[in-house]
Length: 183
Ligand SMILES: Cc1cc2nc3c(=O)[nH]c(=O)nc-3n(C[C@H](O)[C@H](O)[C@H](O)COP(=O)(O)OP(=O)(O)OC[C@H]3O[C@@H](n4cnc5c(N)ncnc54)[C@H](O)[C@@H]3O)c2cc1C
Image (tube, rainbow, N blue to C red; front, side, top):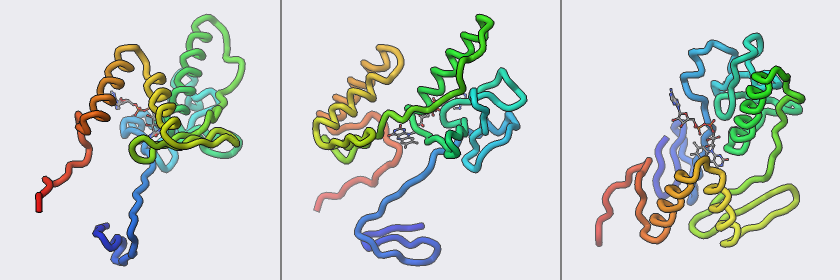
């Protein structure tokens, strides 16, 4: 696929467009394949109700490595699902070490969705509630930093974010850009 100012060329066909959006799913780490369990098309292990592997009760998969189906629908590969699954399995292991069995299977609770749209602007959706704008962007930043484990990670990310915000510099880049020429 190639793109220019007029659109994209995909499969040998030109699609004219002023705006080009790219989306991609999240695939599981290839290390998951080494386990040899059944996986979905994204390479995630199809887990049981307690996030364990059917037939191997003491092995668990969580987050992007786990394919969790609830009410007949796969749960999304997002951070809040990974956090909830990690907490569930942590508590389950503790319970088993104390000789107890988990009271209930894992249930994903969708707390809502947020996305940043450019600088200083974010959108939030939680059930029927919706908001957007600068305040939402501040809430987004707070929730993301507060969700990080350990104080030192929170402080480091906060410092890096403030540095990028005020200087426009990034500490790392995934996509390199060609040097800009001055006309
Ligand atoms: C570009 C992008 C944007 C996203 N945006 C959002 C968003 O806005 N909101 C949202 O909720 N979710 C978002 N997600 C999805 C979210 O990041 C994941 O669902 C979430 O991080 C899954 O958590 P995890 O712990 O399962 O995996 P990860 O967070 O990927 O953690 C896995 C860890 O394992 C390490 N690891 C991998 N292989 C090995 C190995 N062999 N040995 C040792 N360590 C290893 C990795 O380095 C990594 O640190 C985004 C994902 C991508 C790729």
